[in-house]
Amino acid sequence: MDFLLLLKAALLGIVEGVTEFIPVSSTGHLILSQDLLGFTGRKENAFIIFIQLGAILAVVWLYRRKFIDVVLNLRREPTARGLVTNLIVATLPAVVIGLPTEKWIESNLFRPIPVGLAFAMGGLAILLIERWCKTPSVQSVDHIPLKKAFGVGLIQVLAILFPGVSRSGATIMGGLALNLSRTAATEFSFFLAIPAMLGASLIKLIKVKDLLSAADIPVFTLGFVVSFLSALMVIRRLLSYVSRRSFVPFAWYRIFFGALILILYWNRSTF
Image (cartoon, rainbow, N blue to C red; front, side, top):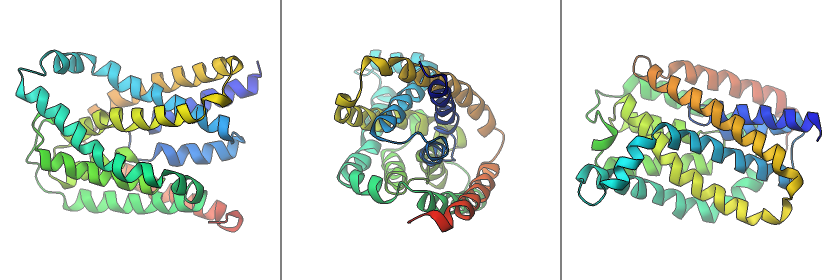
């Protein structure tokens, strides 16, 4: 097995796990990382889809007790039914808008310049929301009104239409704009990632299954495990962080990183 290939798989697993659930865009970082590592192509893109499942598994593992309680109490507990209903309703906009536009977006916007612009604009949006967001009216993920859940789902579509916006960034900041508490917005973003990312990843993997062989198992497994472990660490720390601090540092990171991308790629990109 090629050691350099395994190293690339581990690095991309770290990038996915670290960036998936913080508001900095895992897609944007992965597009740029693949470009820098020379890890591009249909099979390589299938690898990226696969390691996203590792990040999703980290959420499922950390919240396994809550999910088990929801399943066991779905029929008799209104709170459990409400959470499931919210996740279904919030996922619908991504399905309705995301599936028909997927091919066009991947062909036209998965490039450094659009990603760099999305990074910078997303950073500005975070600064504005942090400045103007009101006192939260919803403190717990279990008590989010259906209309607000649907609103978060609509805002999530921005991340589908514009690579670099950040799914977690859109849903967390959308939640804050809709007067969810920082913890409620962040946890709902985590939970919403499961149906949104799981469905999209499985559909994409089915389309490219003919490209994969037994020889790919070590590379895919390594990326999956590294993504899972790094996401596990980030999720735990992010919850602790948001209970005490704002997302302003992430905003400035996005702005400076987006500007750097534009500077590096402006003269050698075809937009």
